Image (tube, rainbow, N blue to C red; front, top):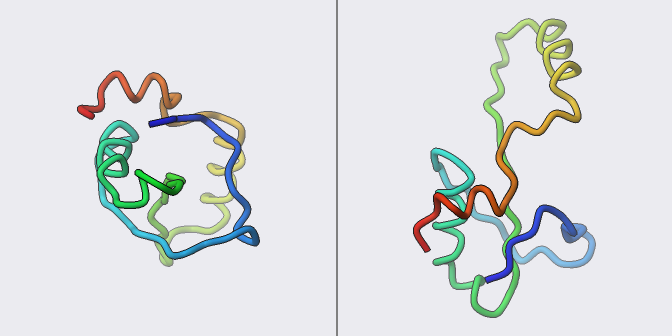
Length: 86
């Protein structure tokens, strides 16, 4: 298994589908993805999702997101692998 922090495929290249998984953190996401059938002969790209509250103040949300921009909130892949039980 090869784990990297980048080099993501562009959707125009080829997307065969997607799976949404609900996990605690990146380490658990890597563990689950490693067991996926495409992990053997294909490629799997993990991306985080954040909840979206339609009732949230959109101005406050935009300001919060601007502050968090370019700030890494998840561990690097190698760091996350130390906690994954592969």
